[in-house]
Length: 411
Image (cartoon, rainbow, N blue to C red; front, top):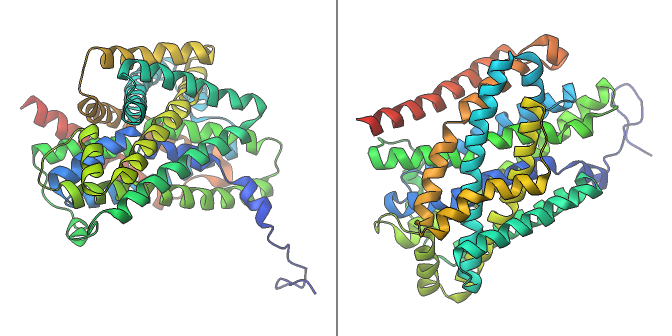
């Protein structure tokens, strides 16, 4: 006999396959939280400060959950992406300003993705960095082409690449001697000097990424089409689970990066990622070095694909203009290829790109908070006063970090 609820009506059984079928958008957005920029900032943090910045990594991942939920809620309730709503609601000058800064952030994002993937391919096969960046662009275009068959194949492919990243780094962490020794000391916030402040802002920029906010709202629009109000509420509940699972996995990956760096390289100062790869091979073994390189390559290729989709969504939403995805991919990869061909240090470029990313966070967060707090837009799903206060505090905190970094750099 099927179970009944409190009023005697048979309860609907939970269908696990149907639940799994609804998961996916948050895992696509989660790629932005484990891209090559995260590799650079987390390994730099661990090698220079041990576990001292672990609290920054954890805080950034925890804060990401409600941010991604608000983005998903906006797409589900309105059936429109955050960029599209910004163009509808805000003055045109504001939309143009948001688009201009978003494109600058997109260039920094592409820089991190292509540099990381190229470095991963170089470590695996010895391919020159410039050529490896071009190969990354081709692979990214191939993955994006899966969208022609609907959103699901693209989500599954990105999910598989996320699993590769996770398995590779968990394996390296397990093989690292005493990877968690001293981790408790990093859970409490401490004083940030100039060097650690730069790395901390880079960690935040690499974790709470603007294009992930824009992207998540857009991914939910197709899922909300034609649904009733009750069905949208069920979709919101499912998406909360999707976000918790995806962001927890991303948090685990980021902690693994810092744990490996702290366990193997604490006190050695900032290391390049190729030096990290070499050190892992010398201390742990070739299999661990291979796992690291494969994870870095998977991170770069997947994030390059997701970044292109997000950039197209931002341009289309904010200014109503679309470029062929292949053309956009070719344009945005030019700076990264030029930088690598010029012989710039990949790891330094990755860290600095994440600092640039952090300056784009307030633009996306303020727009998201303003729109989800308007009853005329959100209806019954409008933000509560507690959510508004909490998210305002997040915006102020992230903006303050950027201002302190800017003032420190000027001084």
